[in-house]
Picture 1 (cartoon, rainbow, N blue to C red):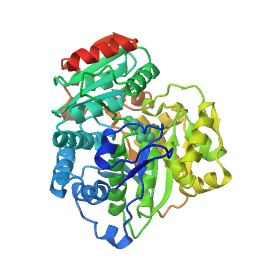
Picture 2 (cartoon, rainbow, N blue to C red):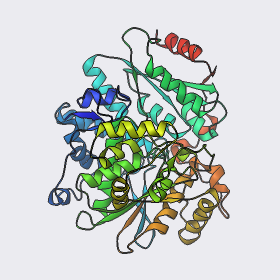
Picture 3 (cartoon, rainbow, N blue to C red):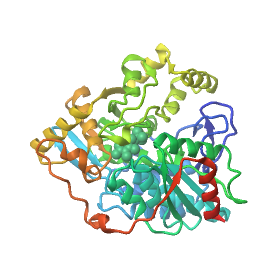
Length: 464
Ligand SMILES: *Cc1c(COP(=O)(O)O)cnc(C)c1O
């Protein structure tokens, strides 16, 4: 299978190359040239498969023989072995025909483990084959960093450097990163904000000459195709549990970078009957403004109690735009340039087509807290702040009561205790057993000034 850039002006890559690549050379994102399609009968025949068996069926057409079937099965088995629940992604009912899909049973309590546990093992396998070592470099405002570190800590061919803004991530989030004491894991607290961290990572990818001979950087943010691909699986898995593909299912997805919900869109394009895909945002609502008012303009970032969705620009949206504009890379380049100067306006056709699949909803902190409270009062179930926004969006946007509605639970409530306790009547959520000693574990982290040369010197010394 070939992967092409959304801006139409970069070489196409095969699967292994696309896993190692970050942005395309033309600034675009890689997508498959054609998507695998499954018939209803084929999907129906998968009912009752384990999560791992289903993952193999969905992922192998993308890998397209570049990795032997038996090896791909081993990579998948290792990836989901660390999950604490036998169902991997269990469903919990929270209302009439309303379900929460618990995507937080992985090691770091957020859905990002689905992609990053898989990516770590996949990278290690590909690098072994190529006899190559790489450095993973990423910036995090919270969840991505710990999930990437857990995904890579046992990989012999990877050194991982994660930058977080000094004193600006929650204590649970910081400790999940800094208490991993493996030799190939380096946490850097940067004296700056999240944007400074991200700018430093971007500059490092552009010019990698600071690395020792033979090393390259690999990206683990959601522009990496393998992350998106791994997330397609749980859409099929949950739909199959709720009567799909004979019955349509709808999904509500707490959205930041548009990675998770884009995977749902792909599931639909690959043949899964989906009725609605609901984009749920907090006050950083560029996607909601775009779908509801064709207002895709930059606004300043606002800090919310659902910090993993505090994102000004959703990078994976470009992948959807590519389809909405008939896969015309020149058009996407023009649109993205327009957006560089502040705002982009979608064509009537593109907006109409987007609205056939997506609806959207925006919820502020107050609305989120009352949703946590309501769901707790009616079911005893505790939602995390991100998931609560998804549940509220589902209830507001649902078109059809007889279609099962799945709300993706993107994090465990114990990951955001300060926010959960702000909801009336809620107590501090307990950490799962495997993490109960988190606050007494030893931490390891270096603090560096917000200076590109200093960070590069530090990374170079660690790798030499
Ligand atoms: C990353 C994250 C999101 C947003 O996911 P995207 O793929 O960026 O849309 C939502 N909730 C939680 C808890 C997250 O960690």
